[in-house]
Image (cartoon, rainbow, N blue to C red; front, side):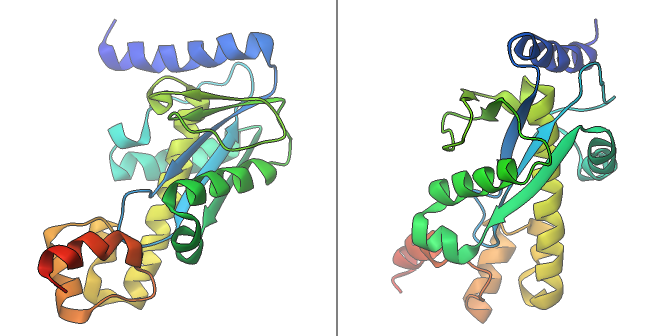
Length: 210
């Protein structure tokens, strides 16, 4: 079996195994913990039994074009989905981990159908009204988490394109807020804008002696 097909098959087999114990469960993932700017996003997705979405995979393993193609398919075919975020102000107040967990809580709370169980990528779980299981590398193991990763990533990318229109000097549409050479050069030239996360730039300024 080709590796891509094997991975795809295993994604849905993982979910089928979870569904034997929890018929209605959601997958959760976040996007945007590492960048220097922008809100952090999370998505929660409930996939119906028997659904398969050709080409679904961990969003990091998909091209931007493929993610943009898959996002509307996921939204149309999912039993329920919700995308939520936590703001730059909340990131600065709470720290990025707690802000990401807050975005996850909001995404689950926004589902039109409430699940009886949740699985989330990583090793940190949000506090939810239902049991939640962490899955290391979950976005490459579970179809529901992979679907959530695609929705969270495409929503954040769209938000960064909007920020690019507001602050074109930083090139947000190209680097999506990550600490690229071009991004740091723009910060050196123009300073930071309201979309930046000041706490993420402390070490950079310390190295520069500012």
